Amino acid sequence: MVNYFIELNVVLEKYMSKWLAVLSLVLGVSTSAHANLILNGSFENNDIKSNSWKAFTAGTVDGWSGTNMELWDNFDRFNAFDGSQYAELNANGNGGRYSIFQSFSTEVDMTYDVSFAYAARRKGESFQLDIFSDTDSVLFSQVFDDHAIKSWSEFYGDFVAQTTLTTIRFSTINTGTYGNFVDDIVVTAAPRFSASVSGVSVPEPASLAVLLPLAAFALIRRRKNR
Ligand SMILES: [Ca+2]
Ligand SMILES: [Ca+2]
Ligand SMILES: [Ca+2]
Image (cartoon, rainbow, N blue to C red; front, side):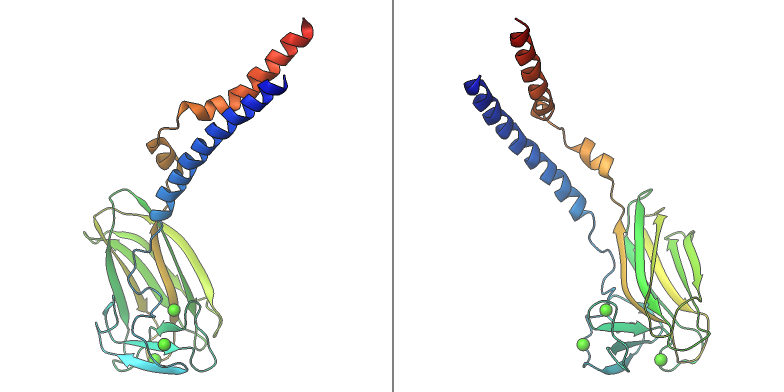
């Protein structure tokens, strides 16, 4: 019996290590699907001095198009949500409404998670998030007017892509040059665990690892009953 259990343990360890290898492969697939599709979503790429702000003319902030933008670096006793920099949507100049946008590659019918942090500079600010397809279908739209002054709130949502290119856009609703901070804008393909698992064939040893102890138990019982 002792020998039998030693052999059983060796067999189980062998199969469990294979099964763990498969499991890590599956997890690896899921992790790579989590890359942020937004370039410079945390506004760190155009490095400005700590405790300062800087106005950027339209299209000069890495990854972003639209109107002028302002970047702040832990300025005016308000620290970034992620890293050390964030954007103020109501930028320098213009005086009207501001809008920044970025397009990214998507897969048709795939679900994407979107998240970001937002904060107000003063009372009464609002901005709108729009996500739309390459054919201008609105996939997601929401007005944000609930933000606390210099305190980050977080938004989490999702959308389903309709085209191979999708655009995310942030537009101010209040005019003027004060307000609507955003940071850490992230879009990722939503995890597809079932697809990942079915995409990797789980070998027989996984089921053997479950069945072997049962078989051993049955064997012991049979021997006892003799
Ligand atoms: Ca940041
Ligand atoms: Ca900086
Ligand atoms: Ca401003």
